[in-house]
Image (cartoon, rainbow, N blue to C red; front, side, top):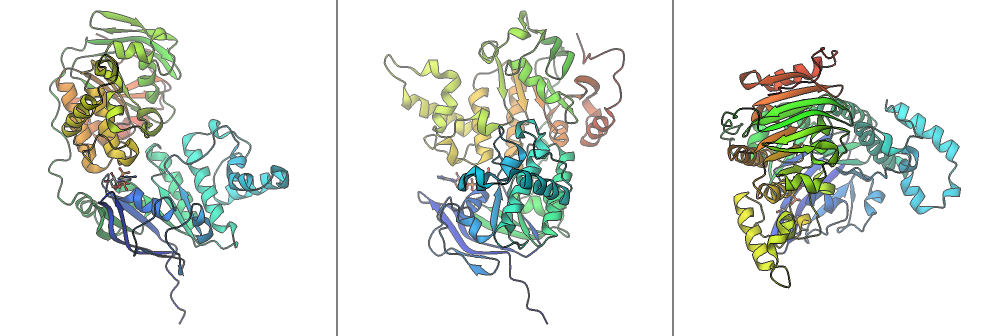
Length: 523
Ligand SMILES: Nc1ncnc2c1ncn2[C@@H]1O[C@H](COP(=O)(O)OP(=O)(O)OP(=O)(O)O)[C@@H](O)[C@H]1O
């Protein structure tokens, strides 16, 4: 009888302490060959720390043990040494260089090591075409990454990582570590990405898939390890475990309520009036909204729904349109983020890492930015007052760890998002523009974000929330507008709103627009 294949990864007794706090506590993780293994847990449960130990970014505590493909790997790993041990990583931000072509990105490690003249570009171009074809990935090697749609960028990053696994000895096995590659992707593109992952593991490789999305984990993984407070809370067989098993293991209790309290009835829809907004893909959008109303904006990718918030904030240039807030009127082509903030408009961007926070600065500095002017003493910033205020906002928004002097980079994704909400909601905005407010945020923190949105709305703010997460829209919105071709083609309100109803309208939304144009409810 053949000896069983060695495990692709065996981690045991893995601990990591930061300043006396245990981020990982005797974690054990086994990944079989050819397996896709899920790694889940609430924000701050230790997933990124575990991945960073494997990447050689964090040295673990003494006593931690690692084997890859049956070979002992001494810890800590030196920077970049993971490649020698047949591991490769795709991080959330993919690590691609937008100004280079797909082929140049594919060869980036060789470009960094060797002189470019040593590369036979024609041969590499042909090889890349074959490589993309073998995975059924429709990427032109000569295309600039900045011109590729998000799904193709994610596919390219994964193909590159898979190529690195076999670069050493031609063997297909090794361990691909996918650290939340999907939150920026609309749901239907995720299926394309999963097909690629399946075809990679079919060659003998294995994968760790880190995600907050239980449905995705149940679909793509064979087994999953769930971390809670730095410890292994459960190991589940993804084919037999139920969603309830996953949720319970992640949160450690049954969620008391899966949706936040419904919002108060929106007041007459005339507080905010947008008329004739054009810009980007958006064509002649008119919309009237009341105080306390939470309006969802959604559609299929390319429908333009995700551009509206940026056009209203001046982060993307509008070519036409008027905005009225009560009695004040603003010409939208003239709006800038500064002017928007002066009007009481705030934007919570989708890409938190690059547009939402400055991760090298302390939490207190990040929170203070919009109100910096009020934190000056005659000659200098009143840092004590900044930390006090950030501490009390942190308490209200349940930011963990409760230490505003920590750099933002020390906080988990969900806790960073709570800081971003605290930073902007302290202003008591009139209009809140949200772009995918819970991407990369765990199931518990998600409820927390929902409650704060509901609270801001109850206090009188009008909220526009652009999202492709239909469950989220169904949970928080009193009205949902569905976009296609830059226009509103359908609208759901009140009891009509459900995850399935939104999905159905989005899928049918490719139908041509009616002669009425793009009127979402003009008062
Ligand atoms: N460099 C650091 N210094 C201090 N504490 C840290 C550092 N990095 C992580 N931590 C702490 O370790 C714990 C685990 O964080 P980690 O980022 O691994 O969680 P996570 O499960 O990846 O969360 P998320 O899903 O939000 O990314 C958290 O309490 C975090 O604040």
